[in-house]
Image 1 (cartoon, rainbow, N blue to C red):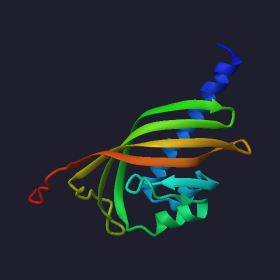
Image 2: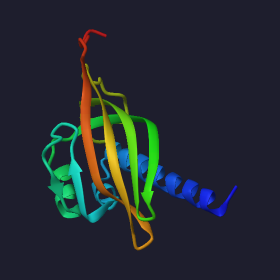
Image 3: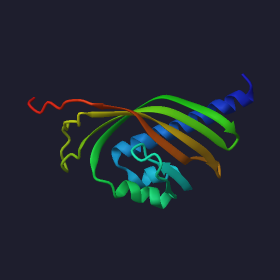
Image 4: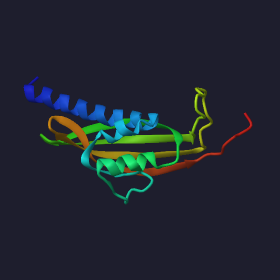
Length: 154
């Protein structure tokens, strides 16, 4: 295996790890750490508003902290990294979103998820900034919306 092949594998792994970490931070509500995954001039297009650009790390942080509190579980799959050049990688992934009302403080028990399930994708443009991979642009979309029925009896 050539050194270039090994270097490419390392870059792909680092970028996939960044995308996965950002989704875990999102579900954990660790907003500052999540915002730090973005470049200073990063862009975010939420899956629920794919044409609305949120620009800049501070604005991205504000967008996360100002939204209503809820429990989320993003299941990320089919993650594929494509190296464009030495400073840009595009990572595509599929995402399934389950959500529920926010748990009460101090309660560690399970909460009832909403009946709606959203299936979409993220396209992340990852850039190298001073040797660190950061999200330059995240474009989210929703392709499928499953509206289930919620059984509140059991």
